[in-house]
Image 1 (cartoon, rainbow, N blue to C red):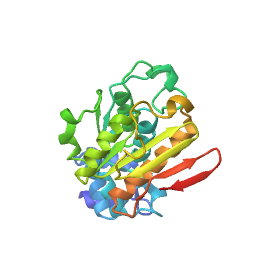
Image 2 (cartoon, one colour; image 1 turned 135 degrees about the horizontal axis):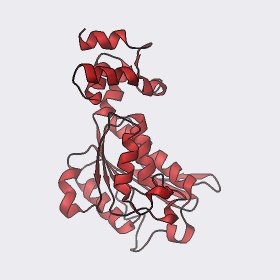
Image 3 (tube, rainbow, N blue to C red; image 1 turned 90 degrees about the vertical axis):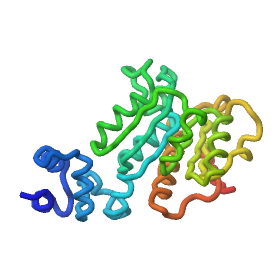
Length: 261
């Protein structure tokens, strides 16, 4: 039986179960990812994306699978963004973080568990993501991102995600991508407040040097998750060329105030 015949015979109401994808990969000597690409080109959606189909068509799902996203920082924001993008189907993710998980990360960082304390954040997160999506290509860099060393990587990705906690480098990275017209999604949190923006310089948000407001207000799990969800939505919209945020969105989760500026 040819692969296309196999896929059509073994689909379930237009969806390809993971077990059948694994079987096809074994029988036809292909990678799991390549089988899914063939299936989606035939209009057959992987079953794990069944809940996506009311919002994403098969071609858009294939676009996500073939997209490349760089996440700089794998702590609170970066961990949630990486997982959300993996679950929705982004197929190529690069992760940068030279830090290790510490006990005070347990309150909000999705990769932080008691067994992962002391382990590199990027490497832990990469292992977690591969357990979610077998089609994922993930590259983990257990080091801090540097424009001097890694600028060529920026030129190969479709969107760069700012998940840093250093306002100074946030501004440098935002300016660098802005001047080269490279899609860039920023977010930051402090206490119950958050901000998110796309393709903007950040000097107006951080006019002075030094640590951000989170050093005074703390970092709460639900604020991180909310900001990361907004970032993930913006990444997906950029990848699919849909209208995206063209201002900075500020949210206060305590008073439920929202401001665009």
